[in-house]
Length: 291
Image (tube, rainbow, N blue to C red; front, top):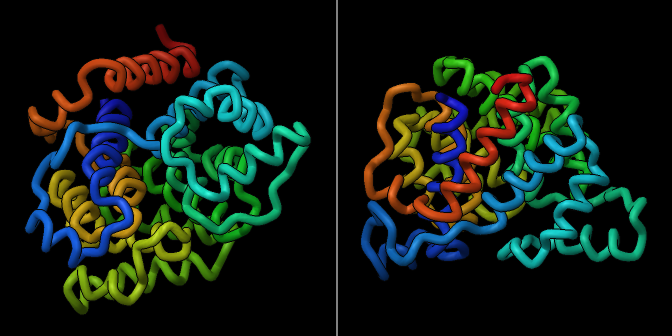
């Protein structure tokens, strides 16, 4: 049940953040005041689509194969809205060379789709498989470390761990690849105990670079891990709002086995989005060898 909650939370965070992606906190306030729900027709972005395509690829292969993941993105590129610059570059390179291996890319595209690894694999296999999945598009240590941080946090969340354990898991995941990113996450968590969350975000940032987006996720959930509050906090901070809110949603809703999603938010998933979520949930159960 927690995995399904995490899937819904990820998609809802993406949809809530989509209309304000790229805006500053001040621009959001001037246009809408505080956002407490959907401001327009809810739509998903590359965050949700690519997360589920990763899951689809792994289900088809019964393992994580970075080239197959990138090939799956390539075959479905017309369905993927708002792809980031690193992913677009990877697809371009893959078209010219199917053996392309990225060595650069510091944006948060690998981290945004990392929940798929946590939904599929036991905790002990998360880091290894997250690294392989990340290498479909991102080759830098910071991007891979950010993905490991998110995957490890989601893994602990859906196992029923408390917020302190979830945060420690995220830091350990980052540490497996980059001490620098792990330090930035620790700093962001420490800062929210000393100052308001918006002031922390002013210091660490909330743009598309992994070294600010992923620490922002952990600052937000350390500040308040209530699923609704944390996702809305991510949305109202602006910047890469859809990606950050999707990662926050995957973690905080994954922690909840009982907290009901607001009816308006569930209804926003009706139709193709819910069908995609339920199909992924079916694939997860099949991957585990269940019915």
